[in-house]
Length: 103
Image (cartoon, rainbow, N blue to C red; front, side, top):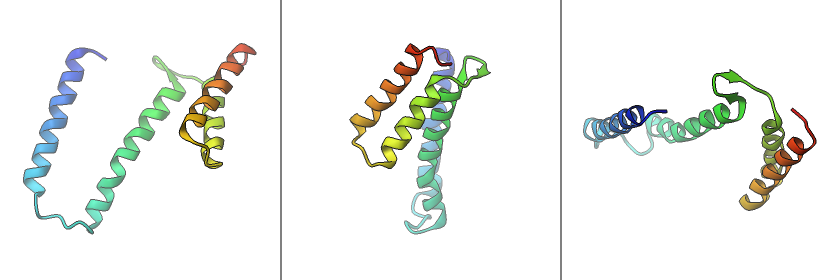
């Protein structure tokens, strides 16, 4: 990503937030469906970035050891492990798979 693209996205984000704040200001109630929907947007963005970083390399889709690390981290999260343990499990499984020569 170039610096120009980053600057454009940053300015666009600031403008969008400002317009939303002034345009929707006091019109949206805290318990409205729009508010509930907007609370899900950050989660969707993080999930999209996560998917792109896990399943792509430059301009192609790849299936490699990162998927094993994500699966191990998912299992650790499901078992309610602390965040530090989740990260260490993911890194350990990914590193182990790469050391063993798995794709």
